[in-house]
Length: 184
Length: 105
Image 1 (cartoon, rainbow over the protein chains, first blue to last red):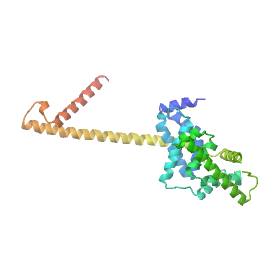
Image 2: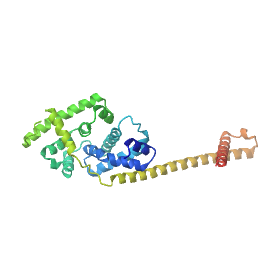
Image 3: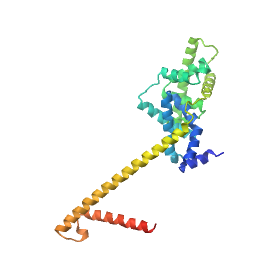
Image 4: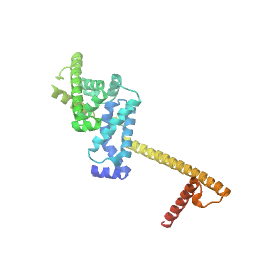
């Protein structure tokens, strides 16, 4: 099996097959991240395509200082944010999130997962992105800071704020709904 | 309390195993890249052809000015108006480079 660095070198030399292998390797990860910013499946697919097209034309600039995933997330974050700005969707409505999640597999996870998805949708784009990268990818604060182009201290405070919001809202909503056993 | 929330969030993200992308997504991306490459090559070629057209037009104007000047009062080459000298020099440089590259194969 080819090493990732070999694939990157081949892609940088202009080999489309090597790049396609990288797309296959990273597409799910990028799509799950983009899903948190762009809930609509059609738009999400378009944004994901844009991410990899941009990556292809800029892969020669990738110097390997950060992990390839970090570099791709950086492109994905910028692309998704600029897509949202173009669409003038300053805030994702809760309905969008609920629709998106009932189509996916989250609903099957039960009330708590559904509530988490709903509350994630209520966070700001930046908070949502930071929380997603931190919990979904287990990324370090420094890597996240690199992706969202903020100082590490700001990322820590965004994460802290988002966690506090989630905790407060989840507690109150789940208590209201009478869901037992969350124990936050 | 916060640890519990951390666990909940981690397990929530772990449970998302479907990306929602079509199975031929990588093929679609490569198609888009192919189209983008063609579009970029086309716009580069258009830009180049525009630049060559402008240069040819300028050279034509320069040579015309030189011809008119020379017809009315014949003078040595370097006493011709500057646009005419520049045009003729540019054309000569192109011809010279072309001959040089051809001779080197």
